[in-house]
Image (cartoon, one colour):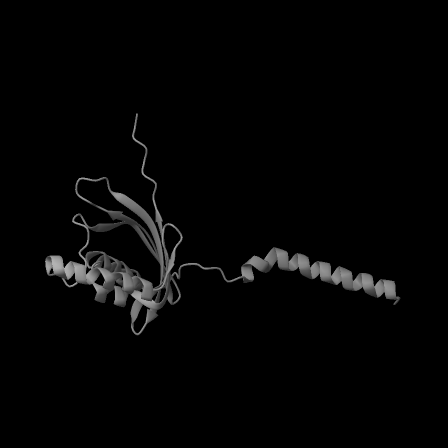
Length: 175
């Protein structure tokens, strides 16, 4: 076999392998799909944790439990916060709240928060949460945020390792 024939043969073999990979390759790739046989308790646990967090949003202890030590929180304006940043902000507000109301931590807004359109998906040992956070303040229009969180089990409980909050633009008045 000549050098040209050997080169063409290798080129043809490479082309066949490349085409085969393009045709069947996506079947080999591991894509993030919710586990079909995943226990529903992870979904229930994370949903319950979310509602507990919103009910106790003014509690420093709740924030310490909810956020993982290595959490990355990205706020609406794109500010990245760590758990230390979150807790520092809570501690800075705490003395003022105690002095004015006797509360142990800042209180939630008078109207409170709720979670709507909650979707919880489990991917192995990771849970992804998406929901619309609604902040209700008496006498003012509701404020909504689209939130996404990634939870992993840490020390026998679910904790947030990544969070993104994006404010939903207010709807223009109907004319």
